[in-house]
Image (cartoon, rainbow, N blue to C red):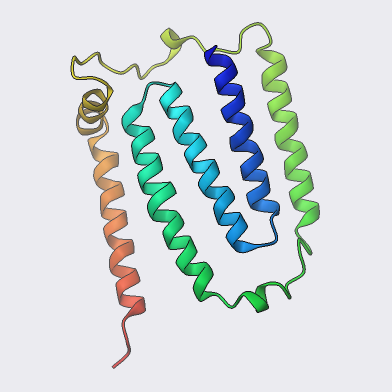
Length: 171
């Protein structure tokens, strides 16, 4: 039963992502993006990662989409419709899409016997903590992945300071 739910949600994610990219109306693209983000959150729920699903829905479907809607409201929409749709990018996009489709085909053909990966083959198996997956994720993040976490926080701090510097008024 879980596999059918996965395929249904994956179909929603893929179709909304394609509609988001191909939609000519900016607000419709943002709505399709919200549908895609919520469906990805549903995939995380299927994986029993409730915390990641909640963060996915709150941060991406909530915060990022509101930011995109503000950008859409501030952009002059009449100028964006004058731009030719997929003018010079159709050939590289078609070639890259074909390469991606071939890679996915080879992956599925090579793994035709079993689509599920062997969890014992993974090198980074999460520790079993009695508090649930949120505590497991916190313990792993602050022990095994502390340095990448701190590097990401410093990069975000530098980006925030740069954005503040660039947006301030010249005196």
